[in-house]
Image (cartoon, rainbow, N blue to C red; front, top):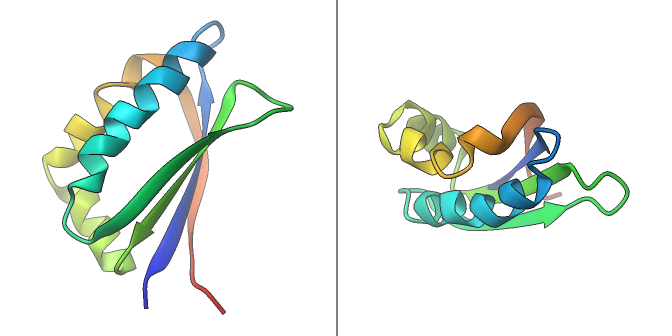
Amino acid sequence: MSIVELVTMRAKPGHEDYLGRTLPKGLAVLAEAEGCLGTAVMRCIERPDEFVLRIEWVSVAAHEDFRAAPEFAHYRAPFADHLAEVVGFAHYTRI
C-alpha cells in the first residue's frame, strides 16, 4: 500500500512567487525518484507564502532512501534560495 507525504513550506518574504515557480522544477526531479508515484504542489489562498507538497511514495522507506540519496540536493536546488522554512511534514496512509 502506498503512502502520501504532505510537506508544508513557507517562502521567504518577497519570494512567494519565485517559490511558486521553482517548486515544480524540484518536483520534476522528485518524480523521477525510485519509489515516487506522483507529486503535486498547492499554494495557500489565505497565506500566499505557504505551500503544500503532496508526494505519493510506495513506502516510507522509499522516501527515506531518497532523502539519503544525492538526488535530494538536486530536488531542493531550484527552490532552496526562496524557502524560509519547512513548517512540517508527515506521512499518511489511506483508510
